Amino acid sequence: MNKRSVGTAYEKLAGAYLEQQGYEILEYNYRCRMGEIDIVARHDGYLVFVEVKYRADSTVGNPFEAVTSAKQRTISKVASYYCLTHGYGTFTPCRFDVAAVLGEQIKVIQNAFDYQGF
Image 1: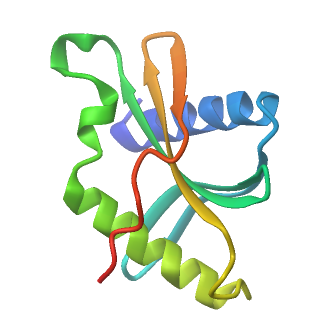
Image 2 (image 1 turned 90 degrees about the vertical axis):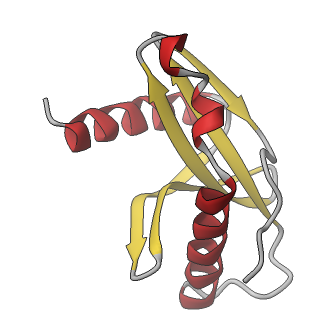
């Protein structure tokens, strides 16, 4: 399997887990000219943008550490564009979650980071 197909497989796995936790998945792999968001969902009244990170084991670091400040800025820009182009208003409550897949375990950090404005 190539890197993209591995990523897609773990994004689907994380999506299934999120659905079990009450998330409604709206889109996988939303792309625009500014970047990509792995999963867009609704949960507890929020529009949620989820970054999925996978590691086979912890020898290369915790999956959460891979969501750098630069990645957070990119996700924030893409989320703004998504809201603008999908009819969500300025006051739509949004949240940024990270789903970390470490081996066979999935852990979700809700509100993992704040919006990183332009």
